[in-house]
Image 1 (tube, rainbow, N blue to C red):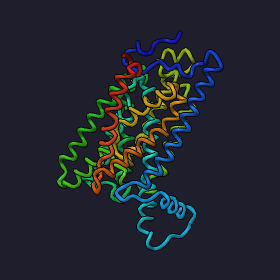
Image 2 (image 1 turned 135 degrees about the vertical axis):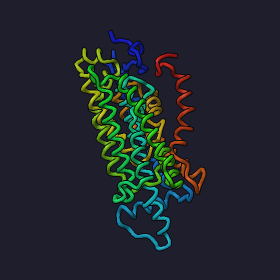
Image 3 (image 1 turned 90 degrees about the vertical axis):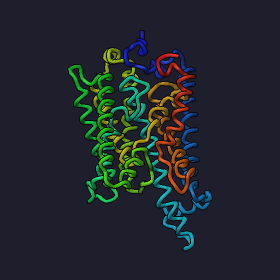
Image 4 (image 1 turned 60 degrees about the vertical axis):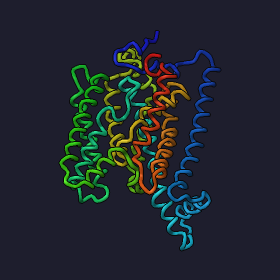
Length: 374
């Protein structure tokens, strides 16, 4: 008999039964059909969203012109001299920014799914382990003290990535005990160290003699894709793709892990070893994403639950749809951040929080089973 994971102390994950062997072929075909429909709709929505993200902004550019400029850039075609400004806006600014938004949204959503299974808590997100707070220390040190100045425009991203990886190492060493890397110790250690990293960041900002540098740090902490370039896409794309592929290959292990360590052991899954490599993978990917976008909250918390409502709680289905849904959400959030208060840009984390908080509360009230009780 499958145990009730909601009875496990510190656990709020719902029982994962969606991918259990069905009693008949009809239910299997029904679940597969629902997954295919969700994938098709999500892919179509992402395509429309990307086109809208490139066309919309302080200066709206018609879709036919967008298609012509992108086609000219990809195929090496020509454009008129008077079209160069619009072409530069599309190809050099908006296209890399929209693609980075897709990658960040997809990555945070997938990492959110993995972290919630890893710590067996539906309230976990990619930043619960203190990784983003560590990245903030590195980024603030660059802006305020000029560290890594030799890296030019990549100094902030490089320092943020190093800070995130350093924070991950500290969390791992502090959380590891005689029993291994347990979910409760991992969450508590991550939260405690996150407060410590936030204190260091606040101290750096407080000691900064330059008001503009402090304002830059605060804006970065709230998230922004304003620094997106073509050069920032390959590391983020490689990290997100690797994360999706690896987690899909181990989707069954995630299903079992969310049921508890004893159940995992009885089904032949080494919970400690699985949690260890998942921690490394999610830490690296989160560090890559935070380095290029800042700390964008609520995406990795809310999107996994929304996807579970659509396709069920089986991790193979959730991991297939979550990247598409997360990419759509992040692009629209970025559109709002750069258009609502133009020419000023609203921090991306503000938009995701303003949308994520009501959605999360609505989920909590209408679908209490997702959070361990009605």
